[in-house]
Length: 315
Image 1 (cartoon, rainbow, N blue to C red):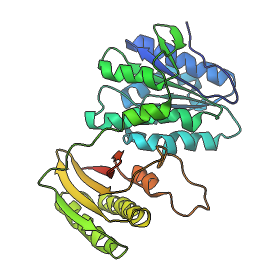
Image 2 (cartoon, helix red, strand yellow):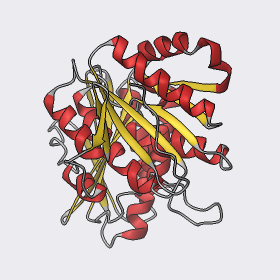
Image 3 (tube, helix red, strand yellow):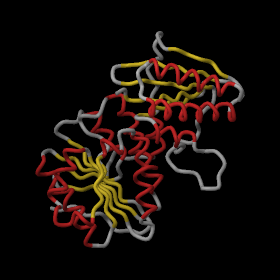
Image 4 (spheres, rainbow, N blue to C red):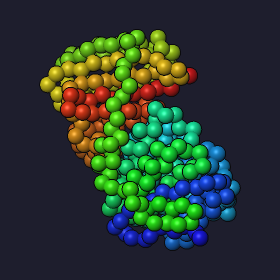
């Protein structure tokens, strides 16, 4: 059996593929791409490096018609995939149907990244619901744990396993699924450096604090600039949209520097930071910018407030 997407100009076809070995992976993903090319779709293949090499070889005869992207690079922050990769590709090919092979979850993903991956997969559905698109998301069923595979069934309306494509019995409201993976963040360590802020006059202090602590933590100059911009945007949002101030905390863990911005506000829009605002809109870009500039963004929002945790990989 080969795998093709259902063609409907007004409905997203977002399906998962559970594969058990390399042969199965190549058979279904390559057939999916070739079928899309035959109908004139614009095709994007975004999978992690080793699988990307396999698919390049398998599709060598049509590679000029396919855009290949290493998901381990373009999607190292899962929150960047929708705005920076999928929506960008869709906008670029607005007059055509797009077909995407998107592998955002793989065995090498760090566990701290995974909740952001599950959130990403759930939110694809409302973002692309009325777009002319087909997306196939492969999952390594032989090496991913049961929780990851369970979430694949929850976040994809259809699933294919061993050639059998069927509606997922576990798929539900994507916003409820996103809420279920809105998990509390681990506590800020007692060794973290922290700074409280309130009012626009605090922005300069916050920028200096982040610069100094990120320098002490060993972050490179470009990454420090990116982090300072991201934190500045989040703090500015706090000051504008909440009555009280907030708190910035910074610490290091093996291989990464982490900065958390916490305030008393509640993030009510799960798509915040996933969809670029209109070009003439004022504001609304803080989380979007943070996703673009940081290696990982984790968010937890609850009645008592919101925390945004920014991760920057150390050299």
